Image 1 (cartoon, rainbow, N blue to C red):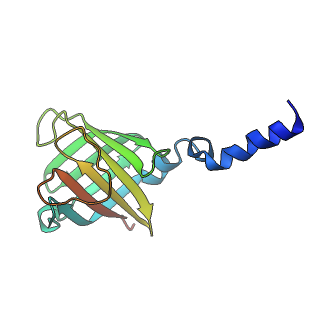
Image 2 (image 1 turned 60 degrees about the vertical axis):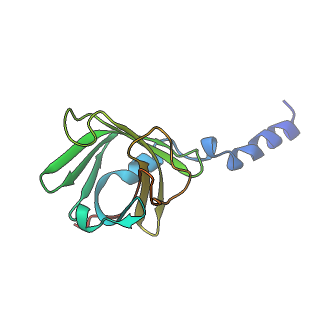
Image 3 (image 1 turned 120 degrees about the vertical axis):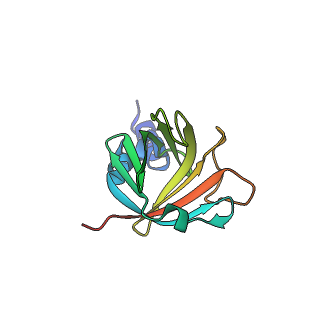
Length: 146
């Protein structure tokens, strides 16, 4: 391979997100406990309904706890997509999300984690919003202070 073609090939890597991002880097950023800061469902503020919600990520496993209610499952990320994709797959045998897979989007910005999920269908949200008359949920989390 000529020196010019090696340079041309190497110059493509910085613009290709699949090669530029370290695999698993975003999953590492998710690790730990996250406290809910805001919650919007179907166009309305639902923070009071989810008061005290904590999202805990350990490896590729998630746990959501709200009072005495818990949902557990696996988290899958695709950081090469824009916006980035998240999929939560509940492993629970009971509860409102039992056996459900929720496709969504995520972003880390200004020390916060924003997640937009579809709670009812396999259609992934296109943007970070949860308008009225949709099954979309928009959550903003702050990392738990120790």
